[in-house]
Length: 123
Image 1 (cartoon, rainbow, N blue to C red):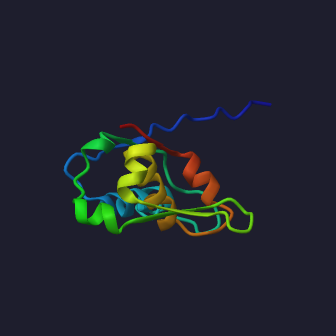
Image 2: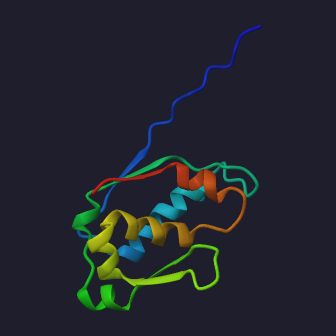
């Protein structure tokens, strides 16, 4: 009996240079979901891996950075941490800001963890 060989799927490379945060995040979310393919299935991961490069060269205004809210919850009472976009960039970089935006655009179901694992972001 022959073993089925695992095919290594090459990631789609997306250049973030001069793209806005929301438009970039929505286009990456569509590819991770697999909605750009004819083999799209709602109940299975049909997307492809995505690699975002030059995340620090994204175009984002200072006004938008101040209005953005990055929320984290530790699970304990009083454990909600709210940071502005500029604070997130200082502490964790553009990578975390883009990762948060993309993950919020994906559906909250069992496949979300699989989709996020297929996302790599480079500054």
